[in-house]
Image (cartoon, rainbow, N blue to C red; front, side, top):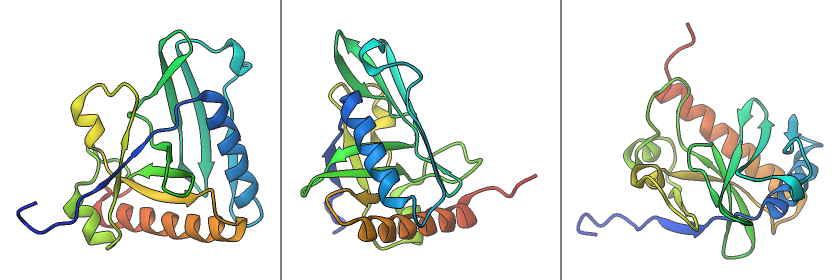
Length: 175
């Protein structure tokens, strides 16, 4: 890059509904003792799900929803219009959350993220990327699930604090 900015790491999305469900369950166990969590898996058995598969997770008032869309029988891709994603990090699965502020029509830019933290944001690569603009959204690392439960909970709290700070700086006030 000509401006000397570090490249944003792109990580591959985890797009298997059973694996996403198992990862959400593991994440909930890791955070349940220290953070208020609520996981809502898809309403039917994963073997019966077709077309789309929605996972709802609320963590200390922050949504971490994931939706997978079936693009071929048994083949899934991440829908980028939800807040979160599981991806394959260098040490194992990671949970990511899009950088955006409450009641704001667009996600945060790289320059705006830099006003909140010096940690580089991430991007997610799906098996079947669609609308180009949606795939340029930036994500914050919420948790590295290869770490201990204590480390997962601590990193998650740091991410919550940064997301709240972004809301304070860039979000619109409640009416």
